[in-house]
Length: 262
Image (cartoon, rainbow, N blue to C red; front, side, top):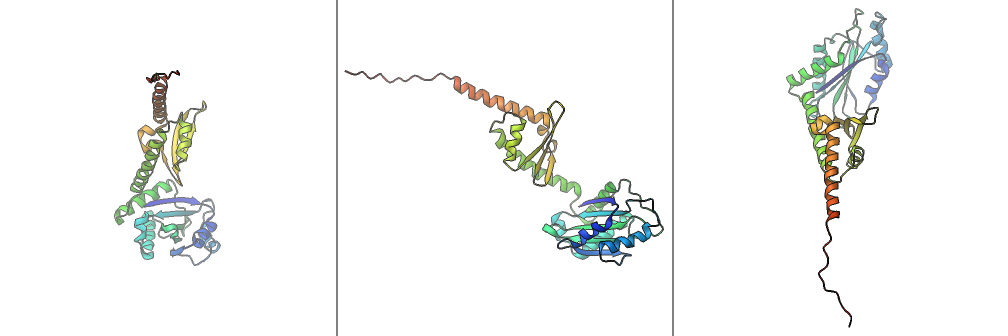
């Protein structure tokens, strides 16, 4: 399961987006009665007015189990998941509302929390993103979910297989340099983002397939910018040499006897 969290200043539009998205369902709420984003934001402001110094005074949280894990969870399970996360984050007594999104078969939670409590104290947002990731990781282990690290590893393995298969095909086409290589990889649905130094030398590579991306070094150490360019050059030189040698081979003269006219 992946957990993301950030502090935001305008919660009204964010709530409206989460609430009005297709197949969205409200899962839980605490100490709020409003229905629209504007109404809920106004209720948040009752406590936020006690701490005018805090500008980003709301939290936006996303909890995203893997697709196989999410399929097996009911709405009640997601409500318990939201409660467990907020309890461990020590945000359970703050105002909050949560929505379940089920679009594209990937169930995930959106939670909006008032950062200011009833006493006007602001919840510290230092490293809030890392804290949410860590707690989501702990919950995933306790609930028997696939963890974020495992999800990332599975993604990298899947993308790496596609890239390596395309790489084998492209290399056999004898690209002359990294730019020709990138152009040919694109024909396999793999886009390459090349980071260049001021002298034009390619010093970094990232592969993208659809909306997913992976660093070249995560595919294999041989796919780093320096190693891949050496491999391309070595392959090109080898294939070029073979082609040149074929051209240099002496032509075999015909042994047929000349025909003479009488």
